[in-house]
Image (cartoon, rainbow, N blue to C red; front, top):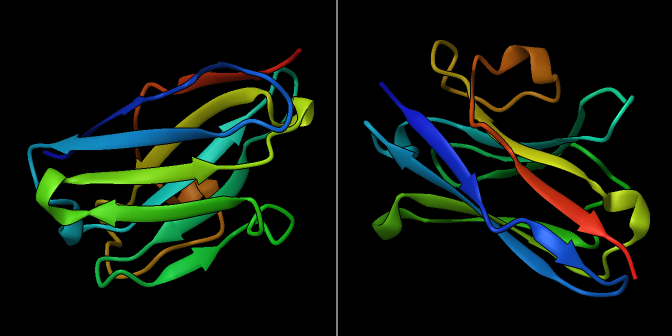
Length: 126
């Protein structure tokens, strides 16, 4: 069964960059779509981006697509989220997730993703 583990979060100053990793075990990431999401305290889950099995990208958030980029390294079985020009409002817990049943496509709805990592905290502050 596919298991996802996020890493790469931390404290960064406004304007800085971070690259988050979503490492998979138990199966190949090329067998499933992988989405990145975030949740700030007291806020709903927000979708960021998703990459399909074939490598096509869906920008779930139009407001973030200019600063956040999803990519995948098949050899490392890892999906990345490159985050640039970070702002304090980007502070949140970031999650990667997949659809293990409806694995043929991405979705803009976080409720359509049924397997989640534990998350990694990103704090943007001076």
